[in-house]
Amino acid sequence: MADFDWDNLKAFLAVARTGRLTAAAARLGADHTTIARRIAALETALRASLFNRAPTGYSLTVQGEQLMATAEAMESLSLAAQESVGETDLSISGAVRIGAPEGFGSYFLAPRLGTLFDRHPELTLELVAITGAFSLSKREADIAISLSPPRAGRLVARKLCDYRLGLYASHGYLAGAGPIRSRDDLLEQRYIGYIEDLLHADELDYLRQGETRVEARIKSSNLIAQLRATIAGAGVCVLPHFIARAKRSLQPVLPGVIDLTRSFWLVTHADLKNLARIRVTTEFIVEEVKAARAELLGEAR
Image (cartoon, rainbow, N blue to C red; front, side):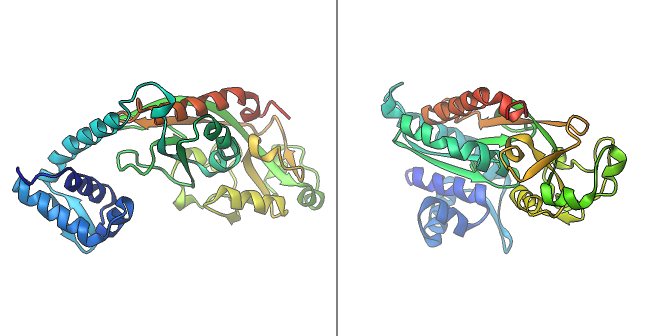
């Protein structure tokens, strides 16, 4: 164990989380040969094979799985040590990566991040606003906004808020579609929605749930693409009120009749939740959501 090196352990964690030397190297700002050398040195020091090597990538062996828990605990201690200055603004620095659904991330959170940065100018804020789930155990994000609570893992979740959605279409589309006065009229419309086999959450399967089950004819895995298609007059779409109501070219369809409610959850890793930079960021998100409750529920114009 005289050759045991913390940098080798960081390389191990990066490879375990990404499954590839090149991806791990990019994450650590090194080259892949250095990462390979560090993994080999760690295996020599521990006298154990930590990875199964295959053309498709690296996967943990039994010994690697055993080391993972210890390595993550050591990583958490290292992060805590970096913030041992105390509960002052001096400790609120470094990068925080936030993973969020594209609608919440791009339309709600992004315009507000400047306020957080003004409070803590030593922070680096990374917003990943995409369709898909984030693995906090693989450190794909430090904080995740999800549509449901996690089912497993050393994760801490709290319900952030409910938000409501409804049907929207452009004035131009509705002018050509004829009056929509009842659910029966909805059956004759052209719908915009998600690609079913690319859905990462059942909560997004709007059109095939509830009383009115219809098939989308224009589909995208991306909410912003759906929004832009709706604005352009391509059809009728289920959209969050907090996004659609800000678009003057859109009009609600059967408001009060078609009314969906979903939830946002805020999730952090148990090992990171008490770090100052994570804590102030989560507190900021909670504060902003609480202040915008009426907007998210579609009660504010």
